Image 1 (cartoon, rainbow over the protein chains, first blue to last red):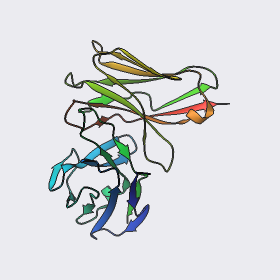
Image 2: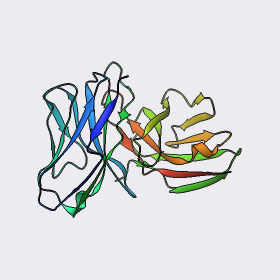
Image 3: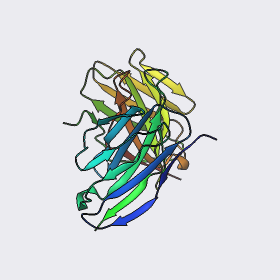
Image 4: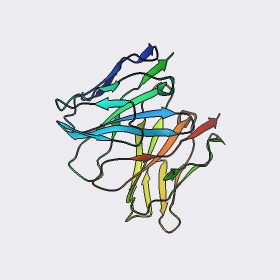
Length: 114
Length: 112
């Protein structure tokens, strides 16, 4: 069955370190998204991509970067981790066959920055 | 500025009764709305959606109502079941952008 996976599921790192969170989908979806979930803020969009080599900033993109070298993967990199980036991160994907294609979410990565 | 608001952080309902979750939005360009359900330690899962050309969409126990003039939507769950206990997020989008703006979520607890 097609799916979307994230790794690692849990990560503890130190302030200033570079961290990369992986997202892999097997639906062959064009669109991929990264969100963070924080209490009181819901899900906020970090970066998104409409296809290979395409990346765009979301509402909370500072300190994060993404690259899209193939259809299946959109890794999220924290260049220099900060305690404010402690959060739960969700990856999602959707098709672009219609204007309102549903986003499907991965299981999440809980990141703690000490 | 929060474009999608869920003003009730939590809601408790007795099993078998109706659960009503509310969501308000400010951007008149939004034309498609969705509800997602999230259990602890899992990703959000799609529940139901509605286009702005409709005012109601029903799927089994779940019904979403849209009041465009009030910029308000609601999710009704009838009858509520203990398995419905979860956090519910509403989301809005402008067709073709594929980007969703999410509310802050409402934690529903259905009491047996």
